[in-house]
Length: 239
Image (tube, rainbow, N blue to C red; front, side, top):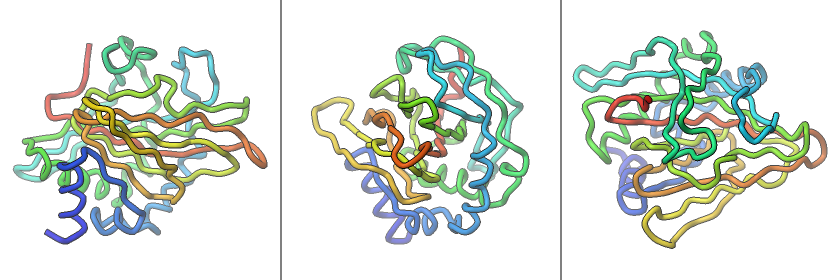
């Protein structure tokens, strides 16, 4: 096990989270930054999120789901399905089936896409062994076209899964967007702003809660693009 992998897994065991630079993410996953950059244009084609219950029009997204098995090692995209969370984990949008457009075929067919998802699954399995992961992939764009954009309109939360990866794809013309990670069972926490494209926050969802503060425009219409991957051992969340 290389030093970067050892440090990341130990940080997840010790504190429940770790923040990786783009270089560290590339080393850990074998997903080179130039190859990841080849996916960035797809964030310009995300359709609006029609399910925002706060009446906002600041979020666009796509969603797809996978199952990763380890014996033998496979990553399989499953038929398109709704995203569902209980109100326990999402008081604003929980309890409803939310259908989003699937992630585009040219993205999901890119070798770097599967490499990124599967490698993070392998890392998480070192922290908490699992026979398989039920994975949901979410492409998000939060924009400031109408003023303030809210990356986490539900507030500080857990996602109801085992592990979460929040990967910054890019941000421009904005201020705000501070990420906050807190101990779910205590008072300790950290704050930081993710600014480097392809830097990644990895979290043990059972141990920490997280949120990102609203963004405001600065020097033009702002946008914050992220890829969020969730890993759950006990099946997809469902009604």
